[in-house]
Image 1 (cartoon, rainbow, N blue to C red):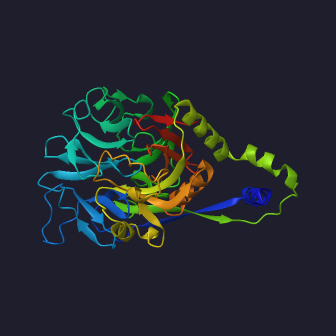
Image 2 (image 1 turned 180 degrees about the vertical axis):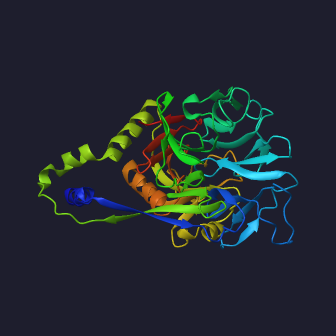
Image 3 (image 1 turned 120 degrees about the horizontal axis):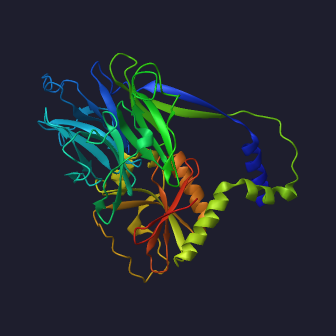
Length: 427
């Protein structure tokens, strides 16, 4: 049976994938005013607009930006909780949407960056991030904060800076010189080792989107993201749930766009392969199998013996029940999902470890695994089919202490997070 499954997998692997991209404006959000800086959190799309307030028919203050959102039902409304008398805009996010950065400024003062976490706590970023100059975009992966600023020492207008976060503190920012020009850089977005940003100093004119990849200790020379760049301005390129979002003024003013990839399997005549040799061949071809073996080696090296696995599909402060979860994340409405405290533990008489944050509700796919491979397969399904980028595998030891395992074959990102919070990347 294993050989037959492997044979089918190999035949699919040998068929070429014909990729088509679907570009569409987000009509429900776009108006004659400017819309930009999209951030997707669950099923909600937040963005910035300088439109007038339709609920009062009063125009916003001159040059004033505000936060808006497309909610679960598709309605667009102003987010009054974070908007006030200053200029308020979205400045970026983490790739998983758990952290959103807010830009605030009182004209003519320069703007500052604020961090909005998953518990809706808004706090200003400390020095040396905010400097008294204009800091206008940021992205964060839990370890590195990358942001843009026009502080002293910048090569042009706004430059891209990096600050490491450790023990609750940010290190002095470093100018990433290979990315910066005498022009203007902003709209940074970090996903894995890939950094996307916009610049008007690298292209043929106007803002284009560029990509730089981090390799060990250096950033690669920026390359244009040709699938979105035009003779017009393209900014705020971000990837959420397998979809790419950005803003462009190709229609006259800035509008929001979504770019999705649609893959079609094109049949192709294949050569005959002997079944008896398939297991060996699959081992050589399957990068996921190699990665899983490396993950097991890491777990052995830190002395963490996993007894069973679950796949986490979400964790929220604002969703307190399964009913609310399935209303908010409609793709799971027919799925068997449980709260973490409802899982079947190894020892029925054991006392579950008390969560550090009892207000954070963790939702698991109700299927218990005793091997990493099928757990990784389900996690891949949740990421790619149910569009939850931050789904991960929770591995529990005999004391029901858990460890965090992330396997994303599509994005080539793999890591383990220990119970102490240490992230171990798998290469």
